[in-house]
Length: 477
Image (cartoon, rainbow, N blue to C red; front, side, top):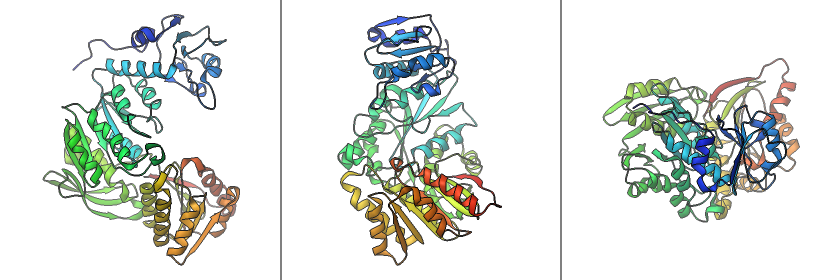
């Protein structure tokens, strides 16, 4: 179906979107490429949205945005130095951004949104889904952190009229958040991967997390499709709360899209059988980590929904070369680094240790705090400690909660466990213990900024092995 009239993100559309919320407008009628909230990311033609925040106020950077080429600004008050741009004045810039995004999405008649939620694996599933269907459709996906009440509107405003599908992450801290994201984006397909005790401090209970994730399937239209992980009991029950069609994925025999006979081959990836209804294909996945199974099945389900047959899906999976979150790099000394410093939850921590255990050599790990687990925090860190004792040869921990991991690992296994209290010494302490052929996992919550330790470790190993090169194998998970 062709679009009769190509929508344009311009002053007129913003005027219509805001209605009475628009207090005043100054300047010429202009078009905008996208909306931006960080003045350092402004490119010519952008609309800068000045959001007040806890640490800074976007209004302080509005003039810089105009100087960088922004065509206009969305403001709550007048700012000197913005007069050459087209200015829109409102009471609340965040609410205005959300209204404009919803109006823009509504104007994109041919666009289908695929929403992805779950406590672990949203980014991976989003990218894999986009890669699988890109051979048949114009598709794009949201940036890694564009998954909340600010990020999703920004993502929507980047979608061009020629896009068929946009895959969007939907995150939450508590209930009634994903429902808002769905209200603006109107997903046709919804993927729910898993439910776990992440953000428990804010959500209040695991029941609230289930309700919050369930909001995605509740928002789907009758002609939509809910892709649900049958192996997670909480997700499986969500089928009772949607009017959309349901496709179950997983290893359970009742799954419509099923993965069986999964066999890891370490850093080279893994093999498995993909089963879709009564058809089966053996596939080699060139990405390490069997924990990717659920993500691949979800992506395969979407491809199947959109008309790709099992052979097309199998071929796409076997040639994947994704830029996903856990980077495996070969450092000087032939030391493998698993850099999974973006964030940490109990499920993703177990998955990362799984991946480490599948690699050759001695297994080292630097494990840090898993934040925002609320009442589950103590038990979750104890369990990771017990797990570390099973699959890790040399353990380093960092952070107050990391100390719990250390203590329970030491109780559970006869091996070396060191707790690091001075972060600036961490990389050197680890480097002193590593030998050629070893593998090291670095993982913890984003607040610890463990990526700095990963970077420092790489530099130190270059000094220890000056005649050997660093290689990013671009094999990610």
